[in-house]
Length: 253
Image (cartoon, rainbow, N blue to C red; front, top):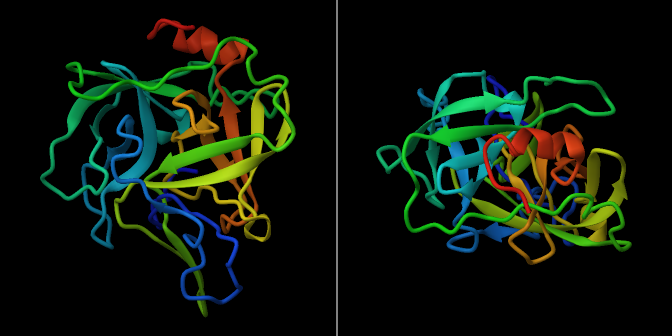
Protein backbone atom coordinates (compact mmCIF):
# COMPACT_ATOMS: atom_id res chain seq x y z
CA UNK A 1 0.00 0.00 0.00
CA UNK A 2 1.70 3.17 -1.19
CA UNK A 3 1.21 6.33 0.78
CA UNK A 4 -1.56 8.33 -0.96
CA UNK A 5 -0.81 11.89 -1.94
CA UNK A 6 -3.42 13.11 0.52
CA UNK A 7 -2.44 10.72 3.30
CA UNK A 8 0.80 9.68 4.99
CA UNK A 9 1.91 6.02 5.37
CA UNK A 10 4.10 3.52 7.43
CA UNK A 11 3.79 0.21 9.28
CA UNK A 12 0.49 -0.36 11.03
CA UNK A 13 0.50 -3.12 13.58
CA UNK A 14 -2.64 -4.57 15.11
CA UNK A 15 -2.35 -5.99 18.58
CA UNK A 16 -4.09 -8.59 20.70
CA UNK A 17 -5.33 -5.92 23.07
CA UNK A 18 -6.79 -3.70 20.35
CA UNK A 19 -10.19 -2.19 21.13
CA UNK A 20 -12.37 -0.20 18.76
CA UNK A 21 -11.97 3.47 19.59
CA UNK A 22 -8.82 2.95 21.65
CA UNK A 23 -6.30 5.80 21.30
CA UNK A 24 -3.58 3.67 19.68
CA UNK A 25 -5.46 1.50 17.23
CA UNK A 26 -2.61 0.27 15.08
CA UNK A 27 0.60 -0.49 16.93
CA UNK A 28 -0.51 -2.39 20.01
CA UNK A 29 1.22 -5.62 19.00
CA UNK A 30 4.18 -4.16 17.13
CA UNK A 31 7.32 -2.25 18.00
CA UNK A 32 9.94 0.08 16.61
CA UNK A 33 12.41 -2.08 14.70
CA UNK A 34 15.56 -0.29 15.81
CA UNK A 35 18.53 -2.25 14.46
CA UNK A 36 16.52 -5.43 13.97
CA UNK A 37 16.32 -5.30 10.17
CA UNK A 38 19.01 -2.91 8.88
CA UNK A 39 18.50 -4.04 5.26
CA UNK A 40 14.96 -2.59 5.27
CA UNK A 41 14.77 0.97 4.02
CA UNK A 42 12.36 3.60 2.84
CA UNK A 43 11.89 5.73 -0.27
CA UNK A 44 12.31 9.40 0.67
CA UNK A 45 10.08 11.98 -1.00
CA UNK A 46 11.78 14.97 -2.67
CA UNK A 47 9.33 17.21 -0.82
CA UNK A 48 8.07 17.05 2.74
CA UNK A 49 4.51 15.94 3.48
CA UNK A 50 2.18 18.32 5.31
CA UNK A 51 2.67 16.45 8.60
CA UNK A 52 6.46 16.91 8.45
CA UNK A 53 7.32 13.38 7.29
CA UNK A 54 9.17 12.17 4.20
CA UNK A 55 9.05 8.39 3.65
CA UNK A 56 6.35 7.14 1.24
CA UNK A 57 7.21 3.48 0.48
CA UNK A 58 9.37 0.73 1.93
CA UNK A 59 11.77 -1.87 0.54
CA UNK A 60 14.74 -4.14 1.16
CA UNK A 61 18.39 -4.20 0.15
CA UNK A 62 18.87 -7.51 -1.71
CA UNK A 63 22.38 -6.84 -3.04
CA UNK A 64 24.85 -4.02 -2.28
CA UNK A 65 23.42 -2.03 -5.23
CA UNK A 66 19.81 -3.30 -5.53
CA UNK A 67 16.87 -2.18 -3.39
CA UNK A 68 13.67 -4.22 -3.84
CA UNK A 69 10.28 -2.47 -3.68
CA UNK A 70 6.85 -2.35 -5.41
CA UNK A 71 6.19 -1.14 -8.96
CA UNK A 72 3.40 1.18 -7.83
CA UNK A 73 5.94 3.11 -5.72
CA UNK A 74 7.51 4.94 -8.64
CA UNK A 75 7.94 5.51 -12.36
CA UNK A 76 10.36 3.79 -14.73
CA UNK A 77 13.68 5.63 -14.87
CA UNK A 78 12.74 7.98 -12.02
CA UNK A 79 15.63 9.14 -9.79
CA UNK A 80 14.86 8.26 -6.17
CA UNK A 81 16.44 8.41 -2.72
CA UNK A 82 16.62 5.58 -0.18
CA UNK A 83 17.20 5.73 3.58
CA UNK A 84 18.16 2.87 5.87
CA UNK A 85 17.88 4.94 9.06
CA UNK A 86 15.46 3.31 11.49
CA UNK A 87 14.16 6.77 12.47
CA UNK A 88 14.61 9.07 9.50
CA UNK A 89 15.13 12.80 10.01
CA UNK A 90 15.52 15.27 7.16
CA UNK A 91 19.21 15.71 6.46
CA UNK A 92 20.16 12.11 7.28
CA UNK A 93 22.24 10.27 4.71
CA UNK A 94 20.36 8.91 1.69
CA UNK A 95 21.39 6.68 -1.20
CA UNK A 96 20.59 7.83 -4.74
CA UNK A 97 19.43 5.44 -7.43
CA UNK A 98 17.17 4.82 -10.40
CA UNK A 99 13.73 3.16 -10.24
CA UNK A 100 13.03 0.20 -12.53
CA UNK A 101 9.63 -1.54 -12.54
CA UNK A 102 8.61 -4.85 -14.07
CA UNK A 103 7.60 -3.79 -17.63
CA UNK A 104 4.53 -6.07 -17.37
CA UNK A 105 3.11 -4.03 -14.48
CA UNK A 106 0.18 -3.51 -13.82
CA UNK A 107 -0.63 -6.97 -15.15
CA UNK A 108 -3.93 -8.44 -14.00
CA UNK A 109 -5.57 -9.94 -10.94
CA UNK A 110 -3.83 -13.26 -11.48
CA UNK A 111 -0.38 -11.68 -11.67
CA UNK A 112 -0.04 -7.96 -11.06
CA UNK A 113 3.73 -7.87 -11.71
CA UNK A 114 3.83 -5.23 -8.94
CA UNK A 115 7.55 -5.47 -8.34
CA UNK A 116 10.43 -3.05 -8.88
CA UNK A 117 14.00 -2.35 -7.93
CA UNK A 118 16.07 0.73 -7.32
CA UNK A 119 19.54 0.34 -8.79
CA UNK A 120 21.71 2.39 -6.49
CA UNK A 121 24.43 4.66 -7.80
CA UNK A 122 26.98 3.18 -5.38
CA UNK A 123 27.13 0.04 -3.21
CA UNK A 124 25.76 0.32 0.32
CA UNK A 125 28.48 -0.41 2.85
CA UNK A 126 27.97 -1.93 6.29
CA UNK A 127 24.57 -3.56 5.62
CA UNK A 128 24.18 -7.25 4.83
CA UNK A 129 21.56 -7.70 2.09
CA UNK A 130 18.50 -9.84 2.79
CA UNK A 131 18.02 -13.12 0.96
CA UNK A 132 15.48 -14.09 -1.69
CA UNK A 133 13.53 -17.38 -1.65
CA UNK A 134 14.27 -20.34 -3.88
CA UNK A 135 11.95 -21.08 -6.79
CA UNK A 136 8.60 -22.45 -5.59
CA UNK A 137 9.64 -22.31 -1.94
CA UNK A 138 6.32 -20.82 -0.79
CA UNK A 139 3.98 -23.24 -2.55
CA UNK A 140 3.65 -25.64 0.37
CA UNK A 141 3.90 -23.52 3.49
CA UNK A 142 2.67 -25.03 6.74
CA UNK A 143 -0.69 -23.96 8.13
CA UNK A 144 -0.39 -20.64 9.99
CA UNK A 145 3.23 -20.06 8.95
CA UNK A 146 4.50 -16.92 10.66
CA UNK A 147 5.86 -13.85 8.85
CA UNK A 148 7.72 -10.79 10.03
CA UNK A 149 6.53 -7.60 8.32
CA UNK A 150 8.77 -4.53 8.37
CA UNK A 151 8.25 -1.04 6.98
CA UNK A 152 7.92 2.71 7.45
CA UNK A 153 4.15 2.91 7.00
CA UNK A 154 1.41 4.42 9.14
CA UNK A 155 1.87 3.60 12.83
CA UNK A 156 -1.71 4.43 13.82
CA UNK A 157 -5.16 4.74 12.26
CA UNK A 158 -7.66 6.90 14.09
CA UNK A 159 -11.40 7.08 13.51
CA UNK A 160 -12.42 10.74 13.66
CA UNK A 161 -15.62 12.61 12.71
CA UNK A 162 -14.20 13.34 9.25
CA UNK A 163 -13.15 9.73 8.69
CA UNK A 164 -10.07 7.65 9.29
CA UNK A 165 -6.75 9.41 9.67
CA UNK A 166 -3.41 7.70 9.04
CA UNK A 167 -0.45 8.82 11.17
CA UNK A 168 3.22 8.63 10.19
CA UNK A 169 6.56 9.27 11.85
CA UNK A 170 9.27 8.01 9.42
CA UNK A 171 10.16 5.21 11.82
CA UNK A 172 10.87 1.62 10.80
CA UNK A 173 8.44 -0.71 12.55
CA UNK A 174 8.06 -4.49 12.86
CA UNK A 175 5.17 -6.88 13.47
CA UNK A 176 4.35 -10.56 13.06
CA UNK A 177 1.37 -12.18 11.37
CA UNK A 178 0.32 -15.65 10.29
CA UNK A 179 -0.54 -17.13 6.93
CA UNK A 180 -4.15 -17.02 5.79
CA UNK A 181 -3.85 -18.24 2.21
CA UNK A 182 -1.50 -18.81 -0.73
CA UNK A 183 -2.28 -18.71 -4.43
CA UNK A 184 -0.27 -18.54 -7.63
CA UNK A 185 1.31 -15.12 -7.01
CA UNK A 186 -0.06 -13.86 -3.68
CA UNK A 187 0.32 -14.46 0.03
CA UNK A 188 -2.45 -13.31 2.34
CA UNK A 189 -1.25 -12.79 5.89
CA UNK A 190 -3.50 -12.19 8.86
CA UNK A 191 -3.07 -8.93 10.74
CA UNK A 192 -6.30 -9.47 12.68
CA UNK A 193 -5.91 -8.15 16.24
CA UNK A 194 -8.35 -10.71 17.60
CA UNK A 195 -5.81 -13.38 16.62
CA UNK A 196 -2.88 -11.49 18.08
CA UNK A 197 -1.46 -10.72 14.63
CA UNK A 198 0.14 -7.54 13.36
CA UNK A 199 0.60 -6.25 9.86
CA UNK A 200 1.06 -3.41 7.41
CA UNK A 201 -0.53 -0.20 6.19
CA UNK A 202 -0.09 2.63 3.70
CA UNK A 203 3.59 3.42 3.26
CA UNK A 204 4.66 -0.20 3.76
CA UNK A 205 4.27 -0.89 0.03
CA UNK A 206 7.31 -2.72 -1.30
CA UNK A 207 8.44 -3.64 2.20
CA UNK A 208 9.41 -7.18 3.14
CA UNK A 209 7.47 -9.98 4.73
CA UNK A 210 10.22 -12.22 6.04
CA UNK A 211 9.64 -15.95 6.35
CA UNK A 212 9.31 -16.49 10.10
CA UNK A 213 12.32 -15.05 11.91
CA UNK A 214 14.69 -15.54 8.95
CA UNK A 215 16.22 -12.96 6.61
CA UNK A 216 14.45 -14.49 3.59
CA UNK A 217 12.04 -12.03 1.95
CA UNK A 218 9.09 -14.26 1.08
CA UNK A 219 6.91 -11.52 -0.41
CA UNK A 220 6.58 -7.76 -0.68
CA UNK A 221 3.68 -5.76 0.69
CA UNK A 222 1.23 -4.54 -1.97
CA UNK A 223 -2.20 -3.90 -0.46
CA UNK A 224 -4.73 -4.83 2.22
CA UNK A 225 -7.99 -3.69 3.74
CA UNK A 226 -8.64 0.05 3.80
CA UNK A 227 -8.17 0.56 7.55
CA UNK A 228 -5.26 -1.87 8.00
CA UNK A 229 -6.92 -4.28 10.41
CA UNK A 230 -7.57 -7.59 8.64
CA UNK A 231 -5.34 -8.84 5.82
CA UNK A 232 -1.89 -8.01 4.48
CA UNK A 233 -1.77 -8.92 0.74
CA UNK A 234 1.72 -9.59 -0.60
CA UNK A 235 3.40 -10.42 -3.92
CA UNK A 236 5.34 -13.69 -3.84
CA UNK A 237 9.03 -13.62 -4.81
CA UNK A 238 9.44 -17.34 -5.51
CA UNK A 239 7.32 -17.38 -8.68
CA UNK A 240 8.57 -17.63 -12.24
CA UNK A 241 7.40 -14.09 -13.09
CA UNK A 242 8.99 -12.48 -10.03
CA UNK A 243 12.24 -14.35 -10.58
CA UNK A 244 12.30 -13.47 -14.29
CA UNK A 245 12.28 -9.80 -13.35
CA UNK A 246 14.65 -10.04 -10.37
CA UNK A 247 17.14 -12.18 -12.28
CA UNK A 248 17.98 -9.19 -14.44
CA UNK A 249 19.39 -7.39 -11.39
CA UNK A 250 20.50 -9.93 -8.77
CA UNK A 251 21.83 -13.48 -8.53
CA UNK A 252 18.95 -15.79 -7.56
CA UNK A 253 19.16 -18.77 -5.20
